[in-house]
Length: 296
Image (cartoon, rainbow, N blue to C red):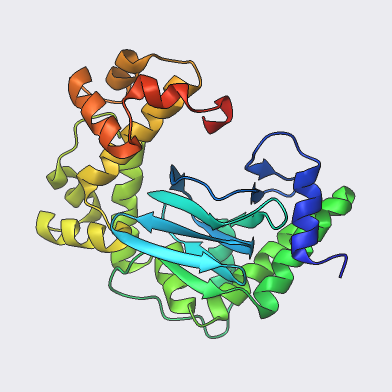
């Protein structure tokens, strides 16, 4: 069919410059494309539905790996650093992906309107899961993508489709996970509040006791719940945020290695270089020299 999702994404990305990600006129809708298998890349995932339209990839959050392929989607419920790699792609059949970012306000409104809303999970579980991309959820994404051809309809129709997508996620087999994590109820809400504080102040020294106080938990309980949700400790989470921001500063030309280290909170450039090399596989200057400006 000429209007399959793969055809629509490929047609749009064919017309765009660069390597992506590709923004679209529809708010919160982004396309991914790769004509070749890629080396693992570090990035920060935001709460979103990450659909594989064609090809396959894996993503690792902390020590937990998720494999997903065409016909599947990764649901990310909490902002988390990750390592991701496209493992199936070729010039004749490129990897194609669609990202739909969640609007948590809309998600809450939809849940409040449900006659029988899902019971949110009480205990913190991992904020990521893989689900089948089919049925009503797939239909919503397909219609969102088709809106690109009628830009005048986007402000009116896109919000309605987004609300419908929220409905199918909340009423589907993972509804309790979506309610408990995306909507941040119970323990998850308090841990996510601490995650936001850590994200906003990642360049500052962090004390587990302070984060635990934000989450209204004991330090040991907070540490355990944080790791359950993100698959990493608070210090590992902070370190990844710092190194990703330092890389961004250097690739964009806003700082050299030494000044980037200080800007993201390191007091020792040598420690920064060691930890950077451990995460990215090469010292800062050598790593940045291999990256295109788009990597920023």
